[in-house]
Image (cartoon, rainbow, N blue to C red):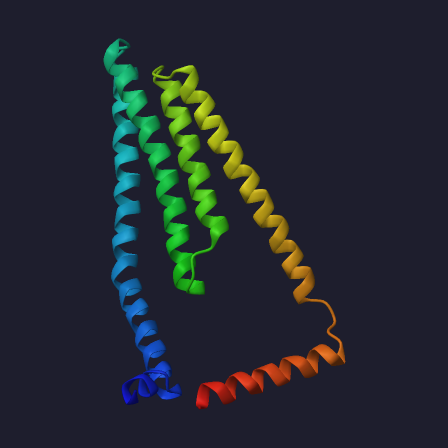
Length: 183
């Protein structure tokens, strides 16, 4: 019982939140250079693939090697876009200390579009694949639009003028929470 009371104390919760913030900052300091290195390597791979593509084009070897080099270049450019979206999600986690649903859906949309482009570009698709990807893309798009609409409504609600009654209620709830937290 004493342990439960100590764990739920205000000081313990503050120390736990402080430890969590330090841990997240440590992970961020560790992960950002790795992510930057990954993006730089991806750019290097794209430049190397571009060089291969240009070499095949200039040497007029326009048979299978040209096709392979071009497909590889397109695949790596699309992978780079997915990496950028994931990097944006990670930076957002660091900045706001939470994962925003809109950015996850944006990354999902980019990934689905990448897959659609690749299967159509490489001519390895079926009608069922395209219908499935279409339904997935449509559902992600609708979800994204609904999230944007609800976010705009939230902003309108947050920036409205509050009444005196709401102000008193907020202060009462705030003091009630502080009292509960201290007990």
